[in-house]
Amino acid sequence: MLQSVKSSVRIINDKFDSELTDLIESAKMDLLIAGVAKTDEADPLIKRAIILYCKANFGLDNKDSEKYQKSYEILKEKLSLCGDYNNVE
Image (cartoon, rainbow, N blue to C red; front, side, top):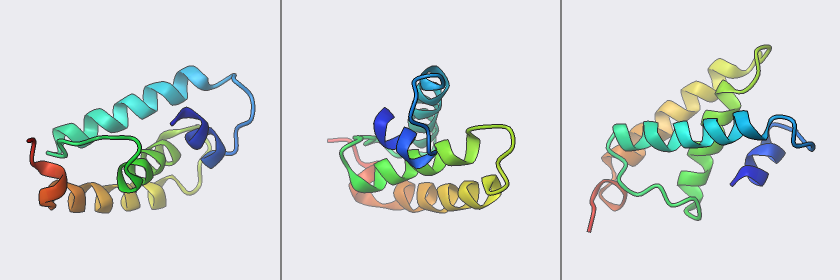
């Protein structure tokens, strides 16, 4: 997941790995709090949600932050309402 996020935020070095790893874990926790019980990184929608969260929250000078945050919030809401993601079996 870290490599996917790094590619998405256009980072090729390891300088920000710790910050990005924290953002990945924060995204998963935010999804869980919203009622998304399954946060498997192999799932394309979960992966997209994590990437959007990271793109919205990474860096201080991010002019597109609000756009990514809105996209993340919409996807999070849809996932939390979908039976495939909010039911634990």
